[in-house]
Image 1 (cartoon, rainbow, N blue to C red):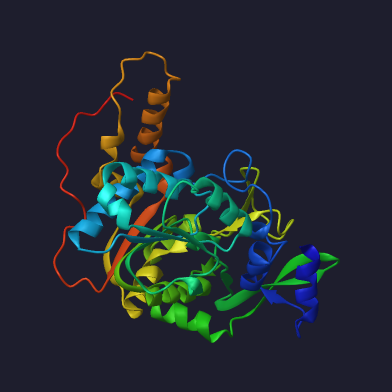
Image 2: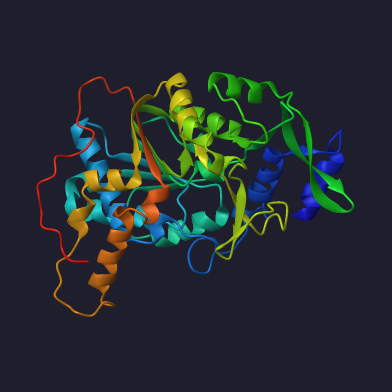
Length: 374
């Protein structure tokens, strides 16, 4: 992978590439990119965990909301998961619908879009028992649908440009070669798309602040909106609002790497072997969504979404004193999803709709049920 990046830098007229190009090569270059390689990435043997791989109750609760949305808005049971990972989230969703809504399951279509050949193979293996599952390499292969499109940790893995304010001026960070190693240089921002993004988002950096500019996210969102004729778009990810990006805590930006479940601060080290990620811009996702025909319904914390969608119904009563029993472990996983300080504390859910003109309830009315002990 290092050779490919060196070639890209060498072929550039000015001997440098943007962070966006670097991330795209490091993550998505065929065969050698991180997501394109034939190796485990998610879970204990990989470099990171996702919420859906920690508890099946997460997927079952998402399924409960999908069923509600389909019934509430008279949508066809057509679902599209963008970035399917190991297939575990799809397995939980499909299992729940097959068990609880057999009539809906009989008419269901479930699309998965994933650029990774390795992950598509894992998904085919995990979902071999389910009907009407279509695994696609690109969103361009997806027909225009009525239904629900959703993602879990998708936009955080997309390429970003990196800018910094220094001595009152805005600079873009580029990658070049210095003394035989990848290094960073700053050049005045001239990219009109970056300047336009900052203008429409009314973003003003403080002195010394770095920020990721997600132009690839905006472009991909436009493709998503173009493939959704009527229904919902659900984005589950970690990120901040424009106001939160101003907080001193985020002054150095959020671009970082993960390898063997350890954070890697220098993202230029071992490209292709390290997962690269940055926090997403939720205000930009909402604003550009409106530009592309989506209506913003609600932005809420993942805990709130799960509670409103009925995750507490997944709790099981148990009298077993063994804290390592399957029921006890499952209930603890649910607790970790809904209590402050748990994994959901880092995630938000943005709900957007398109073409739904009738009034609807965004969440089901939940009947009170006893909470089993954790």
